[in-house]
Length: 146
Length: 186
Image (cartoon, rainbow over the protein chains, first blue to last red):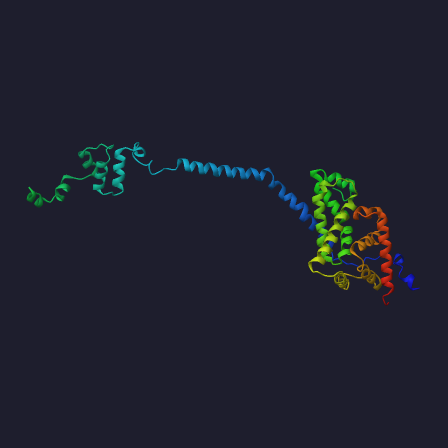
C-alpha cells in the first residue's frame, strides 16, 4: 500500500547528516576559546591592575614635563649670577686650558666690572714674560711716532 | 572536578559563583553542544553554516547566562537562541541574494546530495527534501516534534507560539510531507 509506505510516523527516525571526525571535541574547544579563555585573559588587564599602571606612567610623565619646564635654564638666567660662585682663578685656568685668545681674555675682564683683577695678576695669569713682551713690540714704529 | 554530568540547576548555581563559572559553562557546552548543533544543522543543512551558528549560539549564551532568570528551562532557553540564529540566518540569506524561496530550497536541497556530509537511504533523503518545501518555521516545529520528540509545551516556550497553533502546524506539515512523498517516483 502506497499510503502505508509514506506514513512518516512509522519511518525509522534516522539522522542522515555527518560531521567531520572529532568535530564535537573541536567544537567544545573552539567555543571555550571564544568565551572563557578570552574573558579570563582579558579581565585582570582591564581591571585595576592595568589602570594603575597607566596612572603611574601618566603621573611620571606629568612630573617629568613640569620639572623640565620649571628647571630648564633660560638665556637670561645664564649670567653673572650663575658664575658668582666660581673663583676668578678657575675661570682663567679654564680659558687658558681651552686655548682662548689672550686678547679675548683681557676683553672679558675689561668688560666685566664684577671681576676685579690687577694688570700684574693678569700678566702673571697669562704667563707672559718680559722677554715675550719686548719681542712683540715694534720699536721702530714707536720711535717714529715719538 | 569529577566528570559527573551536572544538572541544569547545578550549572546555574555554579555559574553564579565566579570561581566555578568557567567550569559551569564547560559543563553547559558539554551537555548541550550536540543537541544544539543538530537542531541547527537540520535547519541550515550545511555543516560549516551549522558550525558557525552553533558557536554563535554558545557565545550568546555565555554573554546572556548571567541575566538568565530561570523563568524557563535552560535547554529551552538555549534552543530559543539557536532557533533565532537559524531563522535570522535563513532570512538574511534570502534577503542578501534576493532569492525566491524556491531557489533557497533548491540550494539547500543540492547540499543534501553531498555524499561527504550526508548519508542515508533513499527514503530518508527524500524526507529531508520534502522538509525543505515547508516554510522555515513549520520545518522548525516539525524537526523539534518529529526528530527531537519534544513536548508541545517546550516547543511553545522556544517558539513563543501557542500549543494549539503548534499542533495544527505539525499536523499540516505531516500532511504536506506525505503528499510530497506520495508524488515522487520510487
